[in-house]
Length: 272
Image 1 (cartoon, rainbow, N blue to C red):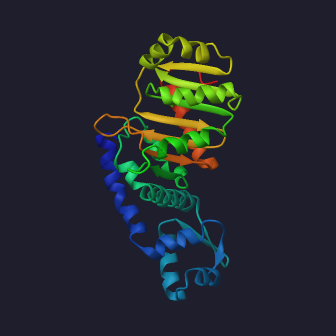
Image 2: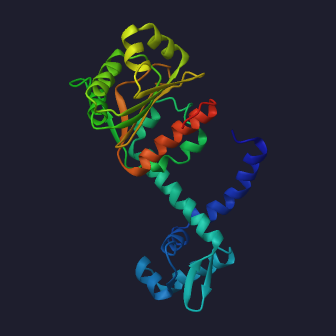
Image 3: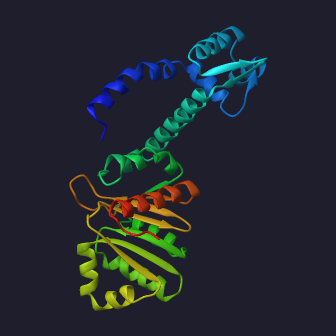
């Protein structure tokens, strides 16, 4: 958590952030120069603004050591590049949250660390699926359909679900799954060990690795070779199987893989 001293520092720095973000021109100039340097004419064509307006904005940013002029070209300084990178990240985070705001608003996010929430922009292309009164199993079916095309799978499993286990075992038996890593809490592991069929099919299967962590997590996360998925618990503590976030691009899969690695590291579990 952010401490009091850091919060005061953040408040002090807010004025600098406000200076940039409350000016459309200053922000657009930084974004325009982000990929490469440009002459005034190129910036004018890019922003469709008069030279006088652009020059005024450029001078303000020069005074803040965010851009510099080299001969006839304007370019970002190192400070400007770092700031603009984070502005882009802020915009993409906002876009990712806003796109799936119903999913994020309804659920308990306490088991997603701050480090991963800061990178929520990596899920900007993920699709939100929900069950309806006419199709109560839509979210679950979407998950199983994607899982059926996976070869290597890592799952943080916070619930004991015969339905999920049945499909997972079918995929293992049909050789659709070549490698499965299950991360579970102690209660789930004990339940697996007490079920003779699951004990034999999972714990006795060379394609399966079950890892036990101390904490019972409030997230159901799958990291696969072809997709990732996330389902969460409601704020009242109940697991919500009616809403799921599914991402298929590299960024989304990277986010899921990093979160699993973080959780294993945090619990002192080997993730190799």
